[in-house]
Image 1 (cartoon, rainbow, N blue to C red):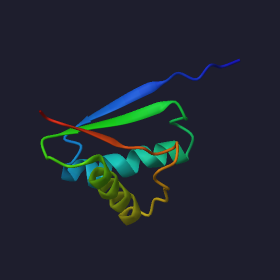
Image 2: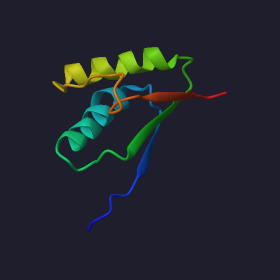
Image 3: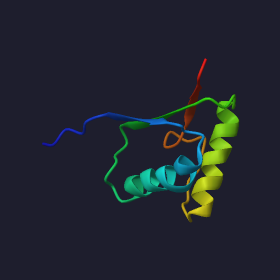
Image 4: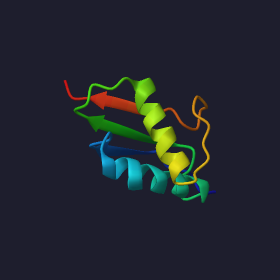
Length: 85
């Protein structure tokens, strides 16, 4: 029996262009193809004073542009932005 391990991915500059264009779509594709499983989290850090709701909107737009399909507000996807204090 294989036990799934939990993992956390931290993205420094989570509100930046690289994260929006490349990192978030790539992570979502890894999840869709079964490479990332249910027990993982992605935490973005940034200097921008965004709310978590706005951050979720940014990620949703990023995934739509990359032809990804995701429903926010589910257990699958609850992005969290930790602003620099």
